[in-house]
Length: 209
Image (cartoon, rainbow, N blue to C red; front, side, top):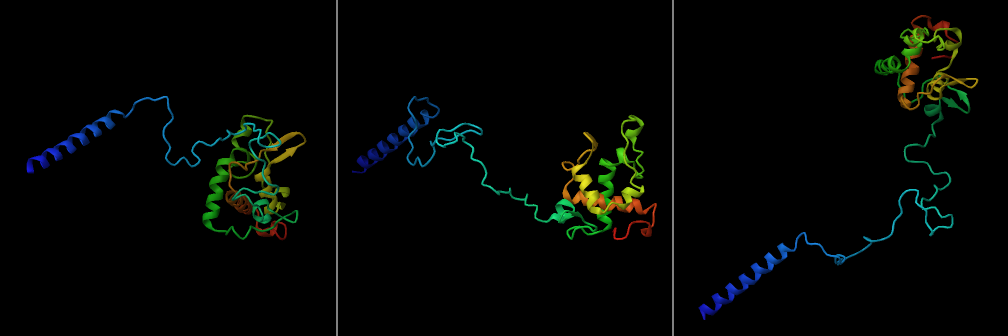
């Protein structure tokens, strides 16, 4: 009886070993038949590539247009003061509430100014940047003249963000891509501080801060 049991155990082990070896040997084999999906769910549903047409929709476009009024997350510019430098279409005369006038802000503004503004306007803001030595066609503004000192902070912000046109020529390019909203305000603060190094507060137009 014991011998029969041992033979049975040996037989089971042998069959199991052969089965395992057989399954191992099937790994990497190629078959023309599709794999078996025990739980297919939506693995094989049809889908469209970007810009690909579709006969499912009436307009034949696979990509659906955005719902009217849709704004991407993080792009809702409801705070006009902060994002545009204006309130009801008029340039603001103060920094937005999100921007605190600190030494760190001025240091950041100076760093950004020296990178993006100084090549044209000069490190002193006198319009004698290094590019003027190589091209007479470039005539940067002197940030210390009466006109620029009279600009409210919102106007300076707008010039940084949107640039300026002179007829059909670009008088100043936009730095919207290079400078974040907060960095633009930091540059605004530094430009005002730069102007104050040559002119006292009383020399600036009333209401400029």
